[in-house]
Amino acid sequence: MVYGEIFENKELRKKALREEIGIEEEEEVPERIVVTPLPLITLFPKDFEENLKKLGISIRKLEPKDMLLKPFGGNLLLEKGKNKGLIAFIGRGLIEFTDRLRLLISLENIKDLLFTGLAGSLSEEIITGDINIPKYLIPFENVSSFYANPSVATPKADEDIWKEVYDYATKTKVKVHSGLHATVMFFYSETIEFLNYLKNVGVSTIDMELSAFYTISNLYNKRAVGVLRITDMPLIEHYFSEKFAELAKKKREDSVASIFEIVLKFFKMI
Image 1 (cartoon, rainbow, N blue to C red):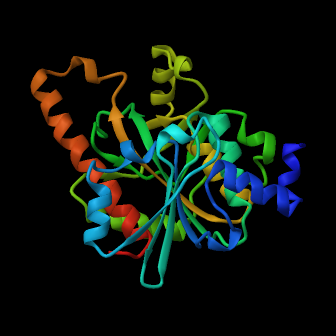
Image 2 (cartoon, rainbow, N blue to C red):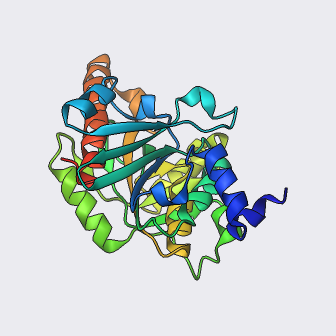
């Protein structure tokens, strides 16, 4: 099988969607989807499925056939009234994430995408438990540029969908920012020297996937925005006290609940 042919061959694409996402038919994919590099059990509160049921939201579990993805618990197709949404864990790490993103995003049904993942903060103003929703970012990766010429598909959020999601976020319990962001390829490329360089050029937060998400979304003319939950402060946090650590734990819990709320508002289900 020549894997790249899935974008031209409908039968191959159908097989790939079943294997990688758990989708049986393209037509069942809704207009709005959420993609994440996090297994859903770590993305949302522990009791999130019970909360969905209490809100009158029906849940259909999608189970990928891929043996590497099976242990992560699968994906969710949600429905409430006329509104539908897909939440998909599409891989850990930039390369795996980008490949599955391109598979999904090539579907015509999909119009709007929300990315949610984790980020580290380089700014004293953006602390653990906060949320960053960047409009713009600097890509320190060359994976997305393999598929898209940066002059054609720039890594930035769609203005309208950014405004919508930013408004949702400001109504949650956590502090929300829109600082300049950078995506790096590897964990161990994050040296103190490199992170200080990023901080000095104005970067507030870093992750390992968002630039590919923005670039590939723009390549396929989809509206996209990323919501990042701050989980650490690599240049700063180790100086703080145990009291701060307790505060950070509570803020993390609030930010997880806030991401859950943002996702459901994005799907128009609350």
